[in-house]
Amino acid sequence: MSGGGQISDSPGGGEPTPRSERGDAAGQPMAAAARDAITRPPASAAETSLAGGGRIRRFALVLLLTGLGIVLAVGALNAIVDPFGIVGTGLFPTKVMADRQIKVDLVAALPEAPQVVIFGSSRAWKLNPEFIRAQTGLVTFNASVSGGRPPDAWAFANLIHDTFPAAQPNYIWILDVSELTKVQLAAGLLNVPELRPYFPSFLVLRSRLKDVSWLFSVTTARDSLSILHHLSTIRAKAALQRKHWSTWGWFTDSTRDVKLDANPGLPNIRADIKDKSAIYRDYSGPDPEAKRYLEKTLALFASWGGHGIIVIPPSEPALITALLPLGWSDRHQQVVDYLATLHTTYDFTVVDMTSLSSYGGSATGFIDGVHLRTPEMKKMMTKVLAIAGSQLR
Image (tube, rainbow, N blue to C red; front, side, top):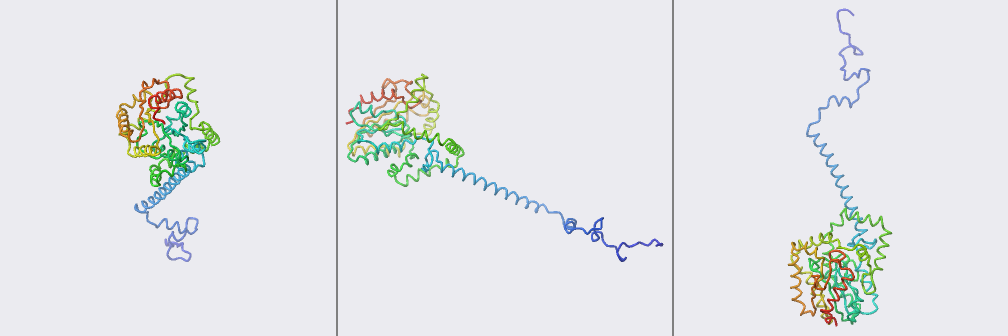
């Protein structure tokens, strides 16, 4: 049409239709989402921040729940396997010597009442009851246990007397200076049904709750997994442990003695220096609770008419040298002075064998920093009995 008129692209002429309502280039209507995208204003910074914060909170929650699940799984594993015998499940063998239960079973099977009971830690394992019997004529039982402390002596003294009510036993107590540090009832002691009743329930509960960090420890979990992985081997070793104890409680395994015979020389004491140094750094003197259990045990024997010998055992000289800067001499003298205040009341003799020269001992007579080899133990106890043997009667 002439006249320069505008041709309408509306179906029926008139006003042109806006492109947004007409459709796209292909003539198709535009989707509602596309229209919204064109007309919606951009999100504010606050909205963006809130959305990001929500994602972070969800991530943190998932992370927290995952971590909590791992911790609970580790705790459940350690509680069930119980690698150190703390919980007392008894489902699997432990990685520590179960000698308290072994000694309890030996007491129950004794053919006659002991007239002398040996107390102490693993330092006293090598004291052969048959040797004491040969020297004194008295039936002897070795009730020493790994990590033995005054509460162990208290429990076994009661157990033996309850088993043989008419007995009037004497005792030989190999009492290391560090055994009078702060008392915490050993898990192996609390988990033996025959020994637990000799302690008040509140003390048992306090000891169990004192430190539960091991339960959620990854290191403990590795020990638990190791037990499960080597279960048959560990069970075989646990069964063999029982065979290493004589009827009268003597540790008969001489493996370490034989190894030292094959490789003569001074023992390796590095582990003992580390262990004992940690004790003496925090040890300012005999603990009141340890003293209380020691005195209760001495009073118990006195009530039965029993007498005793307390032996302060030697340590490898290089170990004592390492402990001197940490106050070893003061701690040793405190124990000597403390025992001096008790021996007339409870009728026992103290024999201090700290110095090797006191019995003609040798540094090569040690398995490590604190444990005597069998011949060295015999040499020391020969001297002890020569000094105080008449106390046993």
